[in-house]
Length: 368
Image (cartoon, rainbow, N blue to C red; front, side, top):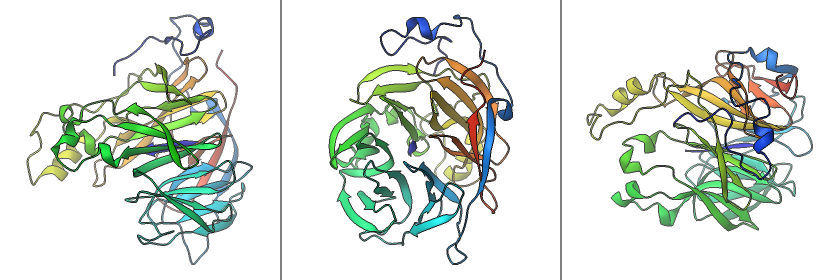
């Protein structure tokens, strides 16, 4: 239920984003402060720890994009190889597909993964404008050309929501640094039904950010949640693409990326300089929905090549009211949130196999 495309503090009780929520949102009082630093095991219980099955001839390089299947089980891309795998809910490998290349049913990497309402598997390849459909058993089905290079896809009812900059809004000349393209697109019968959520800043006014920012998004019920990875708030849209409000209060520990001055990074030394400047700054790395909860996953930039983000903590909201329930729930070191759905799925160690995923459920609906 989550996808990914590559601020100032607000009141504890945000403005309601649907009629009739004003009283509910503030039921605990406007001065309520969510508990901070509560241990993960106080918020969630571990229902199971899943060890991913592997084919000895087709080892997992590293777990990538996760998606719950509609009935049971889950899908998982490889984080480094152009492979998609389908698993039973207990971790048994059921099917795998993917080969490197630029032709039909070939990928250079995986940018998005979702199961459609009809049971097909929608796959986005990196550096490709194609939407590839596989059968539920991961056999080739059809391909569709999209009007841009997509990054991130989620099922939204019978349709798909895709993160993408349209090619027409992404020229190759300098004008692209002054544009604010629309980033979210609803696909109905493989055609764009609407486009929404404009790029939240002018790239020319935020030097170097265009290389660093991503746009996580999640869908639940009749709401869409998205944000820039480097700034609050979280925007809330309805399924018609209309903006209906914002939620999100950064915790005190959130150390946002600064706005760099033009020319701040010397030519030829960009890689080393940017790593030194990024190290330790906070991000909104992912968003996941579990039941009535919106989970905002915070991360921090590492100091190594590749702009790696390490997941560090969770902020948890009641998604119906926008009320923050928990703040800065720490994640175990070297763990990573894979996604949500019926449960929250956390990869226990991003570094080494065997790859184990903790399947977590909330201890209770809301704190006192």
